[in-house]
Image 1: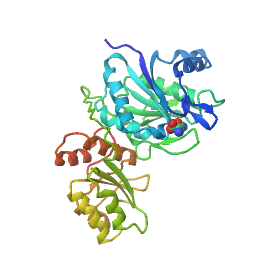
Image 2: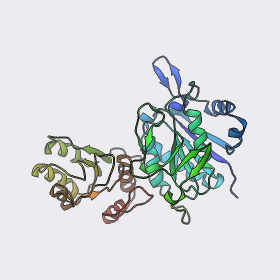
Image 3: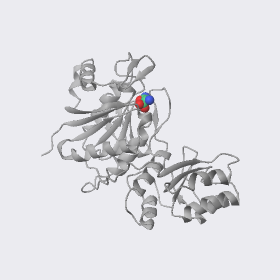
Image 4: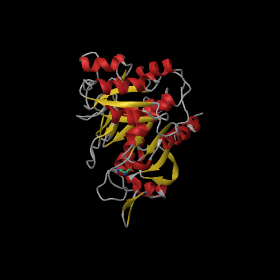
Length: 345
Ligand code: ASN
């Protein structure tokens, strides 16, 4: 039997912060504070919120300190309680919220219930802040049984978790999903889902909960004009590094520099996964369009299509943390696992 109760996991972030002598600091006692804040809503808005229980992490953290161990803890806490709740809300700092949401999507594949992640630009007690509204929105969407994926609720919008990026350091409209349309919106105080854009619920959960804790297995490598082969080699020639997100120009281009390509080829031939995405926030890469992109294809780099850097990074972490043969890792990377990429190249 499944209840109609939502479990709210509070990990930290500005929405729960309090003022300290050196600025905002993560704050505890969140359940009591949230239940108090909810009394400020009108009766009809309060009545529309599903019943919820809370799991508070102690200590709560500023999400700028989150690591893959935190992504793992969230996924495992949801997985072990999966049968007991109708949905889940994760309250998280905004700085790395998109990373955690992306990793949750890879760990919690085949979800049959909503997992809605939210945070805020202002603390719960700030006058005219966004925290209470975002928590309310997340709870309303977490009560909808048609939503069977990891989503981010922010400023009245619902976005796919593994498609979304923090877009603004301050504005309440702080998150965008550049390559996938909104999954839903609050319209006239009601949560509306755009069902054709959702992941279908198909069968039993296929949770994959590998140990994500070994750090430094994946690195990010953004190109810059004038980048040198020795700088690339210094980053990649490290046995603990199992893969890299190559953030290239436009549709997936690199400088025509044989030494640079050679440094990348050496990493690729030693078994490291090189995933190519664009520094443009919108649009896919296409490694066959330009000769300078074809060079990447020739050395075995993998096209990341239109994935966000957050999804690309967390997907690589997810894949190298499992005992998969090399060919299967590469195949899985190119396959959409949870709606994170549009197509196979
Ligand atoms: N530094 C905060 C965090 O990510 C930012 C926020 O939540 N708005 O925890």
